[in-house]
Image 1 (cartoon, one colour):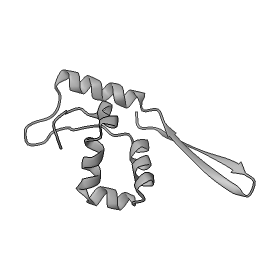
Image 2 (image 1 turned 120 degrees about the horizontal axis):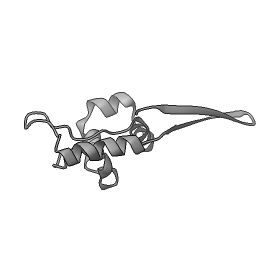
Image 3 (image 1 turned 180 degrees about the vertical axis):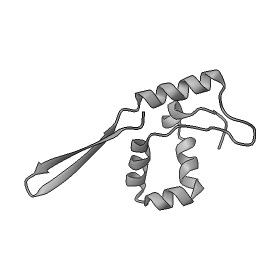
Length: 95
């Protein structure tokens, strides 16, 4: 479900890396879990299943490292509360 593919393209003197991920299975999983109400307990909610490619895109757009993303909750909250990423949400409460 989480398979990320990487391709390399030579463009003259440059080597360009292209990464992609089919996120459809993850969207279907999140929808299924959400519809079943399988969101965890009141002590530990399963908020979302965010694809690796979406996290990589966020890191690249914001200019942060993966470590910064993982240690600062504001980045994860920003992604979880982003309406454009709502399809990946399982528990719809505010984070």
